[in-house]
Length: 245
Image (cartoon, rainbow, N blue to C red):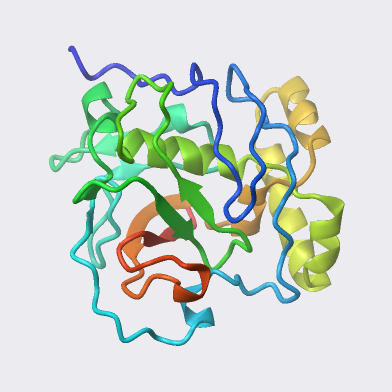
C-alpha cells in the first residue's frame, strides 16, 4: 500500500550536533555508530543540568505549542509509537486504534513535529546529562524548512548512538556509572549474531546506555517555562519520556 512501506533513515548523510557544542558529526552512509566529536562536559553530579527542576520556575506562561500526536506523551494513554530507542530508527512502528501495528509512513515523517511549526527544538531527559537539539535536515527525503517528525526521530537515534568519552565516564558518579555499564553489557547481549555482538561491544558505552533499562519511547512533553538560563524560550524545550519494555 503506498505510503505504508518502511521509511529509510539510513540514506541520510548529515548528522546532528551535540547541544550547546559547536561540534558536528562526520557524514555516515548508514546506521553505524557515529564518529566521536567534541562533547559538552557532564555536570559534576549525575542529575541532568538540563532537567527543568534544575532551574527556578519561570513566571512565563506556557507557550501555545503542541507536539505531533505520534510523538506526544499523554498521561494515561499509550503512545502510538512503538520504539526501543536502543534499536535502529527503522524499527519504529505505529500502533493503530484497533491495535494493529505498521511501519512509519513517508507521509508521517514529513509532517511538522509541532504546531505551529518551529525551526528547532531541544529535547532533555532526567536520565541524560546532555540535551539534544533538533534542526531540519536539508538532505533528508522529508526535508522541510521546519522540524518534522522524521527530524525528531532521526536526531534522537543518532545522538543516542554517540559514544561516551573516558573523561565523561570519570565525571559520573561511580555507583551510577556501574549501572550504565551494566545497561551497555545487557544491550550488547541482546544482539543475536555473535559477530555483530562482539563488534558492538568493542564500541563501548553509548549515550543510550544512560537510560539504563528504560529504553522504550513514551513520547515528548512540553517544558512550559523552557530553560531561560540557556536562552531557550517557552515552546522549544521538550522532555523525553522512556520506560522499561
